[in-house]
Length: 400
Image (cartoon, rainbow, N blue to C red):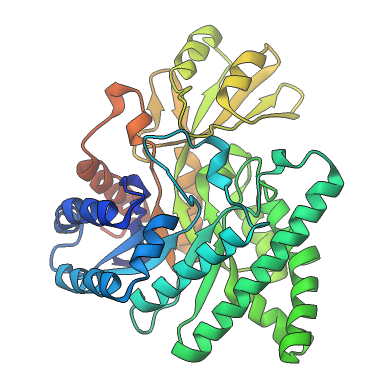
């Protein structure tokens, strides 16, 4: 939906369906109710998640036309697509496979190209649009610095091949599309610092040479093209897990001229071990579930940080010198505390306060997808949960 601070939506990765027919049915079942609750009589924006298998089906002209007809009937528009998870995302073990295939592969490249071709067909006239994507690769797959560098360079070259497609789409349709790269703990691009460093030291130099050779572009033209089409997906949950400060993130982006393609409004779990340590440890154990990765960053008493690839490893290594944990678990936005546990809701409030004063993205996308693996006493009907999430964001933005 349109707000004074940009288009506000939610990501449909909350709905199951790796096959397009299944996912489309989930949209049919949920969107009319959600739209009626949030935007009666108004157009409603949707953040669409399209799995690889679904993207192949949706690329068929007759299937895509059916979806376009439904969108028009429901007064719903699509302006962003979530292209991070490639395959199964519900009712299966995801863990680090959420990065598979990564940007070192042509499978990831071809999938993302399909998503952009779909988005170019769905995007309303006069709007730009973005596809979110993983942080190049999962860094724990690469055991040496040399392997990491090689993977980064190979992934970057595939990103530049995608850039060709975005240039072509803009030339043929006039529509500006951008790849929104999403840093995540334990990605090759773990955080905003990693992202900016890669962008400045790898993407821009390699991209400038690439565009100069292929299009005879000047250095200035090449940089402007890259900055236009390769942007940041700012996931507030991920930034909070890494103890990142939003003002510092935005300042580092401004130094290079990097744009924020979308803000993913999301919340992580926080454990303050200053008191009731054993009770809190037992409470966080209930969130150790087998589907998603729940990376943990522990803040130690000496202000150093310890990183764990999943909650299970953090629980095993828990010790008295750790004073706080941030856990990558996308919990509901509107809940500040879960008994003795807390959320990083404060990071959302701070980030949106900055955005309210000086908007730094056109798109806000609520991304709470873990409803099905939350403890039972926290699970609510999906439609009502989505409505409550977006209503909370609107209240924080203070325009109602």
